Length: 346
Image (cartoon, rainbow, N blue to C red; front, side):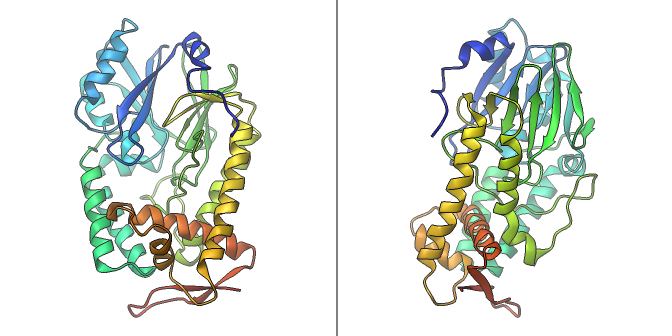
């Protein structure tokens, strides 16, 4: 895999006036990043999740550069997942900061607990439609409900649309949409310094999981939901986003998990190839008889925690989308009347 060790670009990151805050993620990722941009206004890229010690970690990191939480004037969010925005409301309460995010996140964040409950209902229906057992559906719901306790409502005061810019004193961040891992993933590009805040769109060692999120409430940039297409197109959309990112003239990425890294084009290419290889492996595992997405997931990850059911279903459905686009998998039974969707290798 291309890319330098985590600490290789550290001097350059500091020279840019940027500082990493590593926070507990409360999920399988272990840790999640927020980034302090020591500029005017003092800016945070992402806000982490409500977890013991998280606010103190922000205070400590800010104190190390002679700033305090009350100095934060702007929080920019890279996407809708709770480990990246759950603490935003609390940070705003302590600082009075403005919050910038894609426009579809305005209604989502305004009523976050209700929206997260709707997310879980969407996951449950998707899992049932693709062959999950009642125990798997309940386990997934319990895992996500615990994760979602780390998020609270927040007002987005600076709605962004694709192509928006966030202007600070010493830099301008261009907002480039990169849907795939979530509906709202963005790449925040500082073209002058050839650096981007990548959120979970582009991670170094492990590609992001293309997640089948519930479509967001109405808002500019929101995308309509078409189940027969979208359940299967998620990885294709993610791969298109990766290909678009490889063409952006940057040479340093500050990601949502892990350390900063170089050679983003090489990392993007490697992830596209890995997604294609993953689809091939799914096809080999599927065999010749009709199968469900969750049945296939169960055979690949028999010991996976119940709370990861939606992530595993998204992974399999995304791979099946690649295979359908190639004509190597077809829908054998569209489901309905309580029966799951079934696929077959062609």
